[in-house]
Image (cartoon, rainbow, N blue to C red):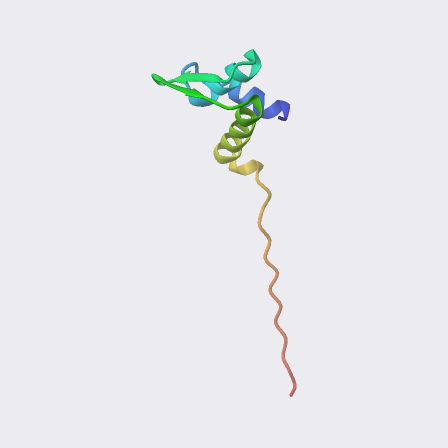
Length: 77
């Protein structure tokens, strides 16, 4: 996980889904409780992947832009 993803998640309000995941990840546990729900993850790797997906979804400017190339030609045939 990149440091900016973890920093972003830890900057969220306590009780927020992403903050709960970050706290669990840094604490080395796979059980996360947020908004009255408890989720048991299989591994810290799964938590790391969830954080990366959440970061990408909430920070669209960080995504790579899509580029399309269009070509046109006049055929003299």
